[in-house]
Amino acid sequence: MSVRVRFAPSPTGYLHVGNARPALANWLFARRHGGSFLLRLDDTDAQRCKPEYADAILHDLRWLGLSWDDSIRQSDRLALYAGAAERLKQAGRLYPCFESEEELRAKREARLKRGRAPVYDRAMLTLTPEQRAAAEAGGKRPYWRFLLSDRTIAWDDLVLGTRQVKLPATSDPVLIRADGTPLYTFTSVVDDLDTGITHIVRGDDHVTNTGVQLDIIEALGGAPGAIRFAHLPLLTDAAGEKLSKRFDSLSLRGLARDGVEPAAITAYLARLGTGDDPQPASLDELAAGFELSRFSASAARFDISQLLALNRRLLHALPFAAVAARLPAGATEAFWLAVRGNLDLLGEARGWWDVVSGSIVPPVMEGEQEFLRLAREMLPPEPWDERVWHDWTGALKEASGRRGRALFHPLRLALTGEDSGPELAALLPLMGRARASQRLEVAAS
Image 1 (cartoon, helix red, strand yellow):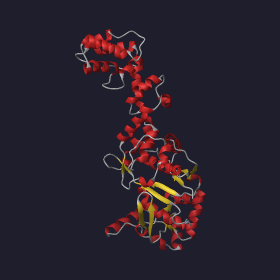
Image 2 (image 1 turned 90 degrees about the vertical axis):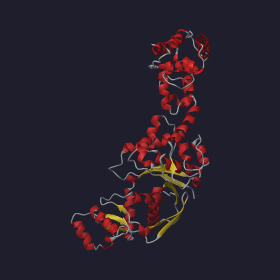
Image 3 (image 1 turned 120 degrees about the vertical axis):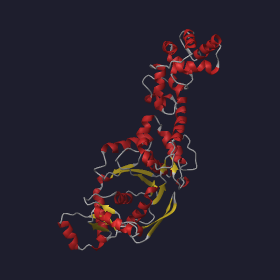
Image 4 (image 1 turned 180 degrees about the vertical axis):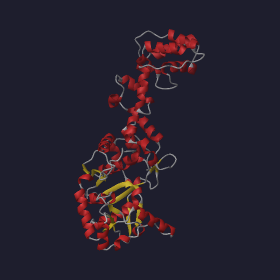
């Protein structure tokens, strides 16, 4: 059987690293096994789903380098869900309920006070046709629950190993709202069966959901074991807290805006939670060695400093042609080669472009005025090449008697405004004599 996987985001916000991870895992798994990757937009919630978020999801996936073989939107498939719901009703597996949220809350609290699990009591199963007619005559519309089997569902998880869910300890899930809107637990199963999904790779917050959905799959005529599951442990931050609390700062478009390379994100996420150290690699290279069995069953710690270190390694090796369109207007290959070894993020290149071609205000350095005036007077005439820094500082060394940090640090501060950075031998010719002279004059005043 050919592998077929899906990534199914809801367009209620922007993609972040937490949902980029299963998207990437599904894509790599499909490519590793010569299968296909389906993009499904779970957009049945008309109030929360927005077209701009749907467009952003497509854009961000493409930015990561991920393509899809097919795509569907759940909002286009409502008739399919209605037909599946009718089959479940006819089989006695979908039953109407009329309790309000307040009534359900009171039931849960009462069960907890008696020391019992807050599982739905299935009171609506005893509803007579007359009682239902009376409720509807009074203006109530039913929502629909799925009658779970009285058994334990078990499966061999491709990441977590053997897992099981005791269905009697789980409330019958609501599959259809009172307004007729089908819910994710239901629509996802219908789509997975209809589109021939063979493997579902998602976060381990869905483990209980998987037990329920396996029961629904069988109720709809799906073959037991036809779909394999893999649950990736959720990401945590450096303190071990759920990363979900910090997702706003780790959206893909936010990382892109800051200058993080998509190849750094994919290389990091593909190996995060495995025993393999993240290394720069193309998507094809990542796919060739991708194995779900290598992921740990323990939570993986997302460390932004590790991502930035990987990003730095990628930037240092990128040729000018790969970044030219994203550099400040006018930036040259000589500039890129001079600064790329000092960048954590591509966005930092703008600051160095200001250093070599714009205006900066160097700090005033107490006690260095005489030396800086001498340095200004000894600036060689143009044209300048890569030897100007060596020749100039060599002459200054002889004239001032300075060497090492005492010679170089005041010059770096005056010329760049920074304590460290790219080699000045490469920056000085780009900066030009007039700009260097003016900064030395300001710093010496």
